[in-house]
Amino acid sequence: MAEGRIIKVSGPLVVAEGMSDAKMYEVVRVSDKRLIGEIIELRGDKASIQVYEETSGLGPGEPVYLTGSPLSVELGPGLIEAIYDGIQRPLDVLVQKVGDRITRGVDVVALDRERKWDFVPTVAVGTMVEPGDIIGTVQETIVVTHKIMIPPGISGKLIEIKEGSFTVEETIARVETTSGVKDITMMQKWPVRQGRPYKEKQAPFELMFTGQRVIDTFFPLAKGGTACVPGPFGSGKTVVQHQLAKWADADIIVYIGCGERGNEMTDVLMEFPELHDPRTGEALMKRTVLVANTSDMPVAAREASIYTGITIAEYYRDMGYSVAIMADSTSRWAEALREISGRLEEMPGEEGYPAYLGSRLADFYERAGRVICLGSDNRVGALTAVGAVSPPGGDLSEPVTQATLRIVKVFWGLDASLAYRRHFPAINWLNSYSLYTDRLAEYFAQTVSPEFNQARSEAMRILQEEAELEEIVRLVGVDSLSAKDQLTLETARSIREDYLHQNAFHEVDTYTSLKKQHLMLQAILTFDKVARIQMDEGVPLKKILSDPIREQIARIKYLSEEETDKIEELIGTLKAKVTGGEV
Image 1: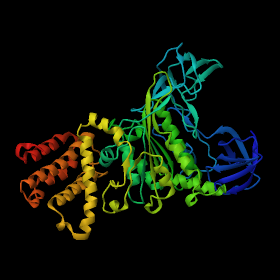
Image 2: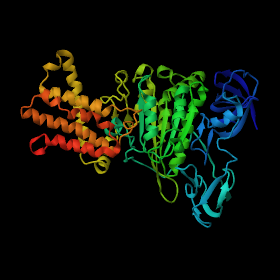
Image 3: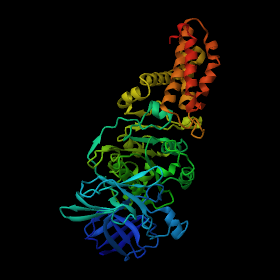
């Protein structure tokens, strides 16, 4: 194993000479403590290495060992329910091995080499196979069936396939290729910085249902889409991402805690095993992979954690699953990039971030998408990426937010003023947007109701009108408005408080089905229409607003999914208030 010598140590950056055999992004072992590092720059025989562990105590003259392989993750049965650090070391194994504090240079494998998995073949000997073909299955958890695939680069005739219990390293099949016989195991290795291959990327057209009313109704996200959640401290970014992880319509969840505080990741770790998954009735962890690289862990590993997470997500996408990846937060990842860039003495861009910040963010988000996977069955998989952004002081004009907004298609802008008013989710309906709205219009019309798109447009129009009227109210007061404008303000308040406001910690209100969302919105808008007809018939506004049915509308969100017929009855009662029942 070739070796170089350290000539400089600057925080997580180590420069070594005598590295003429090294390659970009090759993993190296630094010093006799064997710290894990990755080459990020080559100049002549000098290599700049970002070290994923604490570098205090290292000095010039110590050796650097080449491994010959890039930073890779192990992919196979055992990923689900695992909790990894940024470079895919299982934290539960580290605790057993070295205690609560991660010791430097500790080397553990990502997938358990001792555990045996029951492999059930799904193809017969003699079958011609190609990359991505599913040759068998393993029941990874009670809710996830792990599909064992032919790795990329291998195709030919299947000459042997076994059935029974095997470890991830044991041979389960053999394929005769043009270059000889290849052994197939249940484990694949894949470089994290390289996207996994697929046949074709398609435009997303199906809703990633989240159960969050403000998201599903006004700013929907498509399966295979990209979204960002920027907001200042305390505006609820982490809770929004937890809600998406809990309730999103995805088969597999990959949650990356990238540079967030340890107590936030602790909340995830304590909460997820207790949560019952509405899709399966089992614990949510049974379909979740966690990558935890908190703020007290090495800075350089934050940069790797994003790629580790998305590579695992791509692997499950290749099985034909719908996968959602939550990155919390990409700002901390960008700060790690900035620190490493500064130590490399690169020319800084805006606010000290490297000039390539935008392209690195694009590399991450473009790995999301709805794809036709490799394999002869043309199965479809989807990878949806949601990144939280933590702009300092909530300043959305800062570089990370702006670079992200140029890439993603959905922007859920969290607002500090809404958070201070205890309005959660604090997504500002006036500056948020979704570029999937038009593409999903047909989906909503077919799966929810032909009237859904119109109701959404009408509700948004009322909210925008409210913003304009509030300017007048600030100047001259509510009493100066016409009765119809006062009604608009009341309807907008109902949309805000009875519909957009959602309690993440309430047993019923935490999640709302699309059918219930539509009926809730319909009830509010029907009240508005009925009130306007009554006003035209001479009924005073005060009398209309004192109607007890308004209180019933406010309580709709606390009705369970089985009680949606009560909302339909309420809408019928409202319509009956108008002569002929026509609204």
